Each structure stands twice: as structure tokens, then as C-alpha cells.
Image 1 (cartoon, rainbow, N blue to C red):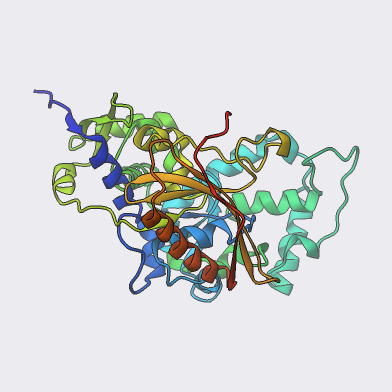
Image 2 (cartoon, rainbow, N blue to C red; image 1 turned 90 degrees about the vertical axis):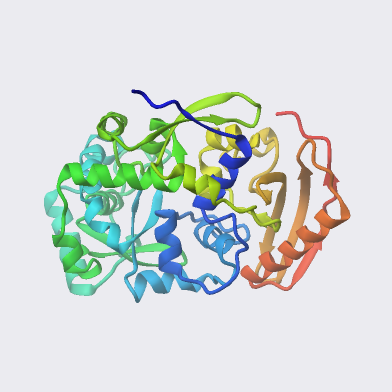
Length: 398
């Protein structure tokens, strides 16, 4: 007999999603950085530092005892994480490495087919790079000097850079560490412990682990959302996995506009929902690359929050701004903020504050934002907050 779908009301869906992503509780207490990253699955890396880089901000949002040097120590000294490609460059718990073997093969094949990668060094050239790294230790792209042949088109990169990328995607080289976000490549055998490199599960076991891990962290999801979580499976593999499972719970999830969508959930979903607590009432400044923000369709369905990052949009065509931070209060997005830090001057400047439709910008809410801005300034190691903003109640027309 086919089980009737479990109905998950919108507020419960929001609370469960925030809980699974570490944003339901107050971000205080003892910091266990390896466990925090393990709970998330991975943390996306990004070079842009308007106030703090995305990876540092994402971690800080979940525990505000975090400071920027901690992730570098976890990678460089402790080898607690490795760096590779999920949907984008990310740090991943080191003990997940055995389940990432197929991703190295998948990306190696994909990179070989990319037209713009065909200008990389040949096998002899790549071998020469490897030998230099073997002899000299970790090297960045700045240690090499090959030239682009032909027209200098946008996005074209030197052959050595393409070769380093290729060997990194394929797992032959690994990220040793970063300095001012510049990646240093080393031999994988010197970065990844041998027991992780040698302990490769079977192909199907890797797919099963990836799919189950994605659904656990999502709480409930469509097959497409499971597929997009890691970016390390094909949609067909996800569909085959769900077809094999006998303990998945069919669900109908209420969206922010009152409609319903179909999803799948883990077998303990009812107990998880029954045990949910209220999300913390603290107002949080989230990063545009936060995992709760990243899937824009899921974000809008669950929270009714229409958000797009505009870093690649020409300034004259932006609806909001270059780097605008979503504001989360409890289980509701209440606004968005444009701010930037000048570390040399020791300032955090707030330029614009937009209030979401239907949200009253009360003195209590304004006080919460003041407290969060003070904490945000400490993350950036600046002391002075400059307020050029006023609450904007009329949204710009996109």
C-alpha cells in the first residue's frame, strides 16, 4: 500500500531547514570547527571580501566565536579539510575524501572536454610542473611563467594555469593552503593522509553516500535539490537512488505563498518535526553565498524571499547593489543590507537598508541590527561603524 504523503506546513519547513543548516540556534558557545563543517557538508570558498570572505562569514554566522585564521589552520596545519569542487570551490571534511574519488574522475573527464582547457600544457609540461612541486614544495601559479598564444580573449588563461587546474580537478594535485586567497598546489600524497587516499568505497556506495548525505542535510527535498546539493552526482543517479530506497517518506511541503510542492524526506522526519524548537530571535546578517541562500528557488519557495546577487551585473543595471546581505530574524527574512569594511581605516560603513514588504521596522528590530553590526565589525577587526543608511520601505523595481 502506498503511503499518503506527509504534509509539512510552511513554518515547520522553514524551521527544519534552518535547523539542518545550523541557523536555528543562537551562534554562541564552544566552537567545534571540524564538526560545524561536517554538519554542513562543505563550505563554499569565494575570493570577494567586502566585509569578510564568504567562507569565513558562513562559519561565523553559525558560531560567532570563529575568527578568520581558524579555517586556514584547520587546512594547513591540521589537515582537517581538503579543497575541491562541489557546485563551486569549497572546503570539505577530510574524512569525506574517500567518497570524493568519483568526483575527481568526473571532473577530469569534463575538463578534458572544455574547449578553453585545450590550451593547457601537454603531458610533458604537466610532468615538469609536478617535478618542480616535488622538489620545491607547494607552489602557486605565480611560480610559473607560460604565455597565452594567439588573441588575448576574455577568460583565457596561461597554459600552466590550465594545467594546474586540470591536475587539481583530477586529484593529482591538492590545495596545500592559501595565502591572501592565492592557492598553493602540492602533491596530493603530501596533503591527503594515505588511509583516506587508499580507502575508496565502490562507485555505488559513493553515490548512495552522497545522496543520503544531501537529503539528511536538506531535511526534505526534490530529486533536483538532492542532485544540486553536492554537484557530484548526475540527476539520473539520484533518481535511481530514490527508486531503490524503501524508507524515504513522501511529503507535501507548503510554500510561502500557500501552494504545495512534492518532496522526499528521511524516515525520521516526523520525530524531527515534533522535536523542533523555535528559531532564535536574534537578527543575523547572512552572506550572499550562505548555503541557506544559495538555492534561490528553494529560498523563495520556503521564505518568499526573492534574492539575487548582483556582483556580475553592471552597476547601472543593479536593482540592489554589488554585495547585499540578507537579514534573517528567527525563521523570517526581514530585510537586506549594503555594507562594506575598510580594514585599513578601521571602519564598517552601512550604506543602505531595505525592509522586506510586510515587516515593521520597530525600535526593537533596529536595536537587534545595531547589536549584529557590532558583532560583524569584530569579525572584520574594525572598530567604527558609520551609518549612512535609513530604512528603505519602498522596494526598487527590478
